[in-house]
Structures are given as C-alpha cells and as structure tokens.
Image 1 (tube, rainbow, N blue to C red):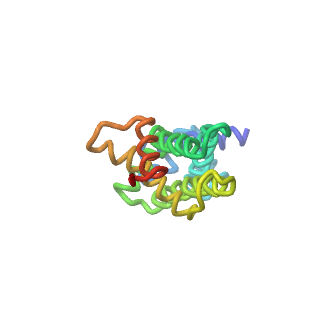
Image 2 (image 1 turned 120 degrees about the horizontal axis):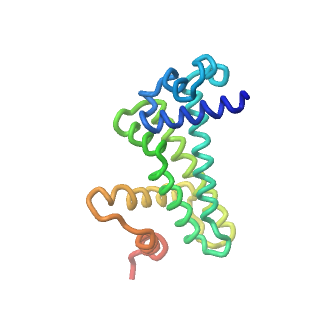
Image 3 (image 1 turned 135 degrees about the vertical axis):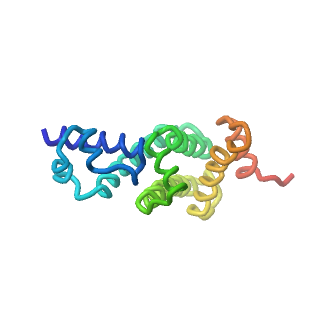
Amino acid sequence: MSINRKQLILEAATKSFAQFGYKATTMDQVSRLANVGKGTIYTFYKNKEELFSEILDGVLLDMKEAAEDAFNSQLPFFENVHRAIYRILEFRKSHQLTIKIFQESNEMGTPMVKEGVQKVEAMVLNYIKQKIIVAIDKKEIQPCDPELTAFILLKLYVSLIFDWEKNHEPLDKEKIAKVLEQYILKGLSI
C-alpha cells in the first residue's frame, strides 16, 4: 500500500511541477492531487526539494534510455551521436516537466530549478562524452578532447533546434545532420 501512495505522490507532484512550475507547487497542492494527507508525503520526503530531486532523477533516467534506444551498433559513430542527441532534445522539447523547468529557470531563475537544469545538461554532456571516448578508442574518430567535443556538439544541436526556430522555419532532422556533418566532420575547407 505504501508503494502505491508513494507512486501517487510522485505522479501528483510531477503533474504539479509540470503544470505550475517548481516555485508555485506546494505540498498542500501535491497532497490534494495525490488524494493523500500532507503528512503522508512527509513520510516519504523531507521536503519539496527532495521530492523534486527524485522526480528529476527519474526524468534523467528516461532521457538516457531514450538516447540509448536511438543507438544502433551497425551505424557509424556520427549517425549514432546525431540520433541520440536529437532524441534527448526531442524528449526535452516534448516532455511537459522539462519544458516547464527550462522555462522557469530562464524566466525566474529559481535556484532549485536552475540546479535541476544544470543536472540535466551535465548528464547529457557526460553521456555524449562517454560515447566520444568509446569512438576514439575504436578509432572511429580522431583523438580529441571528449569533454570539449561533447560541449560543442550539444550546444550546436541546442542552437539548431531551439535557437534557430525563434526566427526561422524549424530544421528537420536530416537537415540538422547534414549541417553538422558539413561543419564538424568535413569542415568548410576545400
């Protein structure tokens, strides 16, 4: 029974954080949505921060699984990285909670939310970095600084998917892959 209550609390809190944001979500609200007493929440979580942190950890795990599902050992490194990063960013763009926390982080700068956004970015960067290290070891790509390369790849994707759309038609997945192949793999030199 307690596992069901904990799950109800997690689902209610996720819904509240996704709809109202971290700052506007209260434990009273979560208890109403979960249909449990507020004290029941405190048997599982010390505070709102701990509850938010557990939910965010679940989202990170889902994000990582989405990226892993995109990997295909039969494809070259660059195609796999493209598929994985694109899947992560699609997840971030379509998952209500991640949309809300990125929005709240940018608009309000709520410290707990900013920390959550940093946690998401750190997970993604580490994931890409690990894939780059494996590709270097397999001699699929030339030696490079894996951390810096992961950062550059992620920022390029974010720019092409989120920033470009602010003033242009969205780029499709194939166009993004082609642009990154031209600039990252081949370079602009003739």
